[in-house]
Length: 581
Ligand SMILES: *[C@@H]1O[C@H](CO)[C@@H](O)[C@H](O)[C@H]1NC(C)=O
Ligand SMILES: *[C@@H]1O[C@H](CO)[C@@H](O)[C@H](O)[C@H]1NC(C)=O
Ligand SMILES: *[C@@H]1O[C@H](CO)[C@@H](O)[C@H](O)[C@H]1NC(C)=O
Image (cartoon, rainbow, N blue to C red; front, side, top):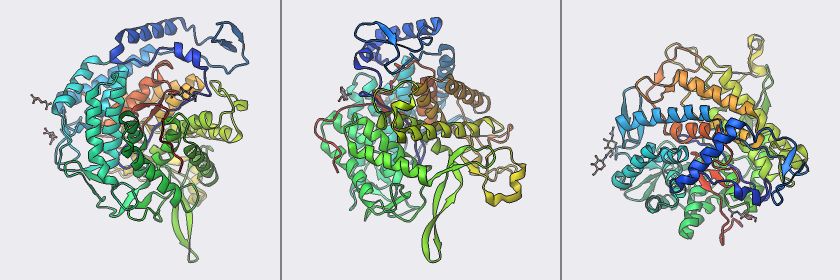
């Protein structure tokens, strides 16, 4: 996820999926409090990997009570084991990236690998964006030394008492989300919860608006909300609706209702103010709560609204029906209004809606561009299909008979969107995807005859100054979808896809002196690099790659939701509060 955008996935059965008793026999994800269990997991994984014993089961299901194998009348769920060799290479990449940051810029918010220096998001000084975003990846990968030093910095050197304007959304998803995930994975190291409460209490005043929608920035020292100077009075829909998982989990941990109520009020406002159906414009008015006439899209400033609809339903163990309803009606509207097919190869993609005036009336026109950010949607749709649309227990991969008709459509759309996103990688010159892919339309006329693929990068042919669209900034969304798709299908093709992306990152983004850089132009194999390693490379891109090659017991999708910065938060059942609006 990135400024003004976001992304991610998770899932959760519980009623669907494997039966409970066999679940309980599986080891939990490794945490530092449980070193011996961790070793056991590794040993089991090695065994599974070397013998390939689990993956050759087919058409047979083990009865969890008797241990007797019977023909597949129950859902088919093969055991997905670790690919140790590939996973080790991904861990090496993480150490290479983190090590350079720690060597050159420890304590700064971001890392600049080319100049081997750091930078902060505000002049008030760093609050540990890179460190906190990296923490749970270290915990999941079992990097104890790195983890200890990162924890030490947070305990000793970090303060939120900073007189600067911090983005409400980014600070919540990266820092609050990172602290909460580290808290859970560390077996409840109280230091993290203390810091999380301190931060959340500084963020809450952002919600002090007539509508309850949060202002886009917050002064962490003064505890005052501030408008985005570029769009005074407005808030971006995705930013306002992508704080809920974090605040609700904190509310669950602390029993403080205020966090919950602030988060839920935003969702109620959105539900009440939707004017043109379930698809919502990307800007809202912080005073009135109304939507502004602006683009409708699944990319920047829209994306994680759609992502968190599903995840809010899953986070509270599917107890809040309102989110299931909002999610399913919204996915149906996406099918109807935004899905298009490429003219050359026929790839499925999502278009945007742009408001126009036509004969004195307002109307929408399609804009045929898809942000890389939209690539979270493939995995999200597949996860949504097997959770919101299951008729009973679900196989891996699901059989059509196990899903409702709407869920079958979502599942298919999800897998098609992943293929499209993969094409934006594999058929670019570098094997890396551009920030924005434009799709050819009938309006391009004769130009179409010469094209080999459905999409193009706008403005990448100005030598020396390619467009913003042409960059690859180490984004995670496609890999995130591959991880979900692999866990839900067991299809090795998704691991191959992920491995190919990883190889391209190694080839084009790895910096000789340490760290990884963004690429200026994915269509140029001699593209220069840009001096920035986004924190989400450590938090999301490498974590999702690691999980893609890990066995299914590592952060299982029926026990966790990932926030939009890939920080896993445990699913829980709320005792009192539920979304009943
Ligand atoms: C970033 O902030 C930290 C903490 O205040 C400070 O030590 C460091 O010098 C700052 N880095 C830069 C590049 O300004
Ligand atoms: C953290 O604080 C300690 C003690 O004040 C100091 O010695 C150390 O240099 C600091 N580390 C960083 C990376 O700022
Ligand atoms: C989710 O709900 C199911 C059934 O209602 C229950 O058995 C399970 O323990 C719950 N899970 C959590 C994490 O609360």
